[in-house]
Length: 403
Image (cartoon, rainbow, N blue to C red; front, top):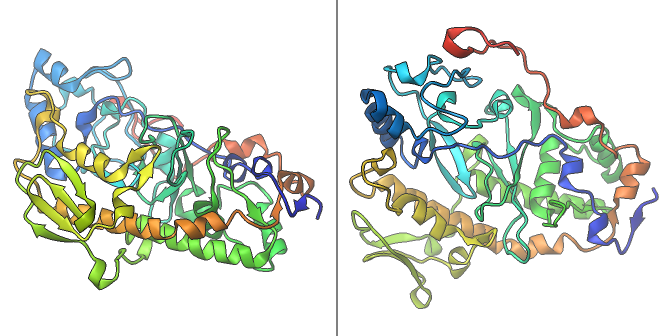
């Protein structure tokens, strides 16, 4: 096959946009109070809002150009929420759903279309237990950290530094049907590597090998079957670590002597987060967690330190009297468990940075090889969402939505 060379410049490696052509822009929530790290907070905020009337309800709601209490909106696919105008809403809080609000940070969302400025219904139609989402991070020149992450939760898709990324579902239909891959790509790679290449294998390789560029993530494809096999194995491990036990995997763990523990209780309302490198200790005011590997503390995505961002999302002060100000009276135990797991995840990923960097070496398939094989350019239809019409969706005021 032509288009294979020993010295391929990275800018001739295919873009992820060419390999996984259907992508969706990040969600635009419009109001921060509809997301919280715990379910109880969301229910308390909902109850406070529906008890308010008139101008007070409107002020608490935080209207935007896209959503006000008088907006007429269809229900989100797969969600049983009210569709009457929110100004007349008096019912119970909808069941919150898990939302990947950013890299390595899962919180809870009120899945009510009347509250979300831009919810991307096409994502909700394909979100199920078989779906995985590749979340391409916005390009930040010189920034360290992975450029492609994977989650089983519905992703908000925002990059830590505020730059737009892209969300790429692995499958275009529910039930793990119709891989979101360039037509002809899997047969071509299967023939090249002498083994069946699946959608999950391609995603695993991309998670391990993707590199940032101004044009988007580039995914160098190796010419050598052994290099492919090694990269897929690494990518599957990276994916399992990021999924944290979801989709039937094991929860991540460091070896016994290196597991982080709470050495001094975390106070009810910690306000500062610091790292003591000599003792490998994370300090939350007088609370202490150790051992915390330096690699976990220094783990960045998009120029942002992940542990600091996680902590800020749970402790930043809110304006008194707003729904955002409603939250736990004290630091919940589950937050401590999540923090210990996050430290473990970041440490395990950092351990594999050297193996990830080595995947770019050696001969690779070029974009020219993919064009020669007819895989590129990708047909326009592959860049559009599939028609998912196997269920009815409720439109505004209880009418059925026309899809």
